[in-house]
Structures are given as structure tokens and as C-alpha cells.
Image: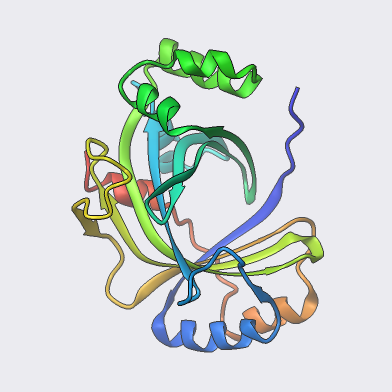
Length: 230
């Protein structure tokens, strides 16, 4: 049985003024994500799934503390890396399961044929297969944003700015960079996420606190984007 590693996840809405100060300060304390492009960012596109009872949506909106959701994630609209992820939430702690897919496996799954999952000899792949067959797990929304990330090896600290949050239809190709999308956040607003294992270094914690990042918000990109696609 796969052992899950749970991490802290804190989320905040911030404006452009906060971002300017935070990003400048963090650039002196942490390293930039090596996967970022020349502008320091990369695009994340996630195709979220839900079942026939809309369990992921209902549980999040009801504030259920133990919940999970499934998504297929790609980067910069490319099919070089395709991951079928399960994000598990326990209060403020998160864990992930991840299954790599080839483009052909992805195409078959999206066409309604989940059987390539059974060929992967993975308990998690079988879990997804059963979710699709028994609970009609299917694509429900596309979530897009640009991410600027700062990282630290100690406690696997990862601090990200997720900008230009957008919602798209699950009916289009996730590899189409011209997919029509709808902006979700008010102009100038973005999501700050802080992730770490057991503890956040004191100087980073103090820096964030001095920037008034001490009031966490119940933010769900998935729920925000579902409002435009239901």
C-alpha cells in the first residue's frame, strides 16, 4: 500500500502590491523553480474530474475536512508530462498520489476507455479505473493559471504565486493553448500558496506575517472555476 506524505498547505488572496513586495523578498531567501521559463513562470492546466454525485464539489462547499479530488495536470500546454493526480486533504494538510500517462493513454481515457489504466500495474491506477466504472468519474472543468514558484530544500518549502486564474470547458483539448477561458479572480488579485513538511523556517514565517499573511482563506480554484461551467 502506498504511503502518503502529508504536508502543510496555506492559502491567501493577495493583490499586486503585496505580490511586488513578497516576490522581491522571497527572491533573496529561496531559489526559483528550475522548471520556470525565462519570465520566471510556467502555465499549469488541470482537467478536474468529479463523480455522478459531484462529491468533490459538494464536500468542499460543505467544509468536509477529509476529502479528495482527481485531476489530470499538464504544463505549458505540452503532452511531454501528463499526470493523473489525486489530491487528498485532511484539514490544512495535503498529500498527493500521481500516475504518469502517455499521450495515447490520455486520449483513450478521455474518449471513455479507462482500460489502459489496468495495464499500468498500479494500485492507484486501479483505483482511478474503479472510480470511473463504478462512480462515473468524468471531466468537469479545466483550471488554468500561471505559476511563479520559489523553493527551498529544507522541509521541502514551496511558495507559489498563482496568477490569472481561468476556467475552461472540459470538452476542449487541454493541449490547445487557444482554448476559450473565463477569468475568475478580480483584476490584480492572485493566490499565494505556502507548502512545507513539518515547519516553516522562522525568518520566512516572520516575513510572511509582516506582510499580513496571517489570515488564511478557504480558497479552492476548483470550486471557483466550477461556478462558470455548471
